[in-house]
Image 1 (tube, helix red, strand yellow):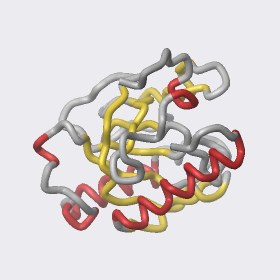
Image 2: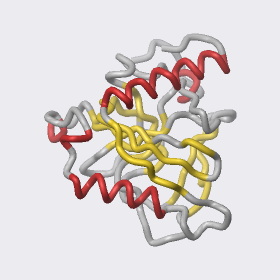
Image 3: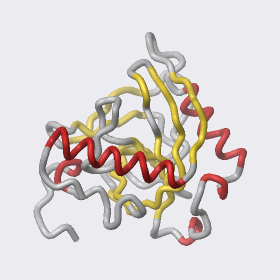
Image 4: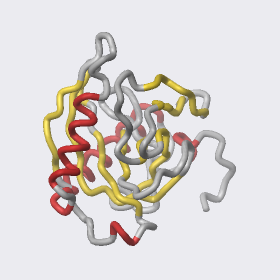
Length: 186
C-alpha cells in the first residue's frame, strides 16, 4: 500500500491518498472507550496516557493525521464517526466533513471531524451540516467536559466549521509539519 516498511506511522505514512479531501487517520482511541491512548511520535508506539477522569467515552474513533503538526505542538487531531469501534493502531481513509474549534490549557486545539471512506453508511455526508444537530451537540459536549475533572485542565468549545475550513486546517498542518521536520509533506 505504501511501498516501504513503516516503522513510525505518523512519520512514515503520507497524510492521505488525496489530502486534504481523503486523509489517513491513525486511530489512538476506539469509539466508546474511556482509555486515552496516545501515539508517541518519537518512539512510534502507542501508550496509555490516562483514563478519563469522568464517566464519558469517545463518541467516535479518535486519532491523528500522519505528517501533520498543529499550533498546539502535536499532530492534528481527528474524530472519525464510526458505527462500531476499530482498534488502537488502525489506519483508515477518512473524508473530512468539518472541524470543531476548541481551545484548551495549551491553546488552540482543533478537532477534524471525518467519516470513513469505506463505510457506505456515511456516503451522503459531505459536510457538518449533514450531521444531525443532536450528534453535533453530543460531540461538542464530550470535548467540553472530558477534561473537566482533571486538575489544571479545561476546554472551551468555540463551535463547528465546514468542510472547507477543515481542509484548510489540514493543509496548514501538513505545511507546518514540512516546515518543522522537513522531508516530503504529502
